[in-house]
Image (cartoon, rainbow, N blue to C red; front, side, top):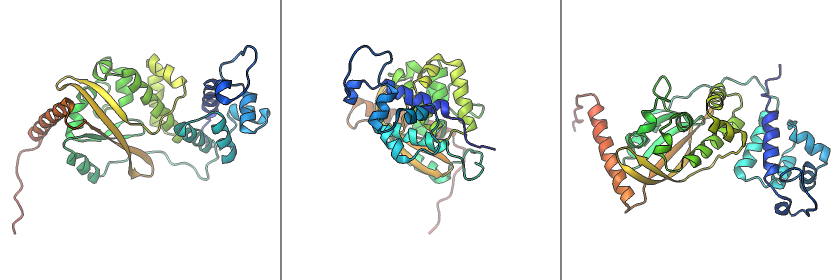
Length: 305
């Protein structure tokens, strides 16, 4: 039985949407007369990639299994794919290959204690860990305080674990918390699209995408755009319910926890010497006090020399 996921529709739509974004002028091609379709024609992409029109047409219809890396590289150059888009194309091609063995079901991975110790050591930065589905699987006290609207949201699952995608698209208060909700929503969908290219057999991911596509027009529209993002980082403005306005920078780092599931460590901090740093320090103080109050009572004796 063929264990490959049928990702032909994803391949077709991804290549077609990338082709529609490039004008003949951008591709260095002459133009003449009216064009019935936006962007490049299939035969024009084929010429730019050094392929026959028939071969490229078959590729755009989703028949990507067995295509060489050289051909994929040529198509990526012709369509002017950025590094994330190129990676996504190669992930789609890899997923279309027949597996050498029956794929194992992807299971959630427990975060080892050393990762939590690392998070807890960052007292002036909000730090947390997400998996590829954007579930928050570990956090420090400041991150929990900074993202209190996320953790308090009814969109968290039955275990109280929040998910950024469900929060941004299903919680009506999310646009009030983040300054650029549109940008956050775009990035979230693009990250999930890239994850779906890497792990098309992930049942939990498919269920999340299905849920959001069903109940959120905003998500459904963005999902159909086939935009992808793997590497991200930058700045965000928050309107925190306790600390007020916060302009923070953030940086994600790949976290090698398990070969079976991708994790990212995301760190938020403020520019030194700014009012945002002062407000973040105040929030950190509140978070530390609350964390101490929630800890079990009792004490440990110091080791004797």
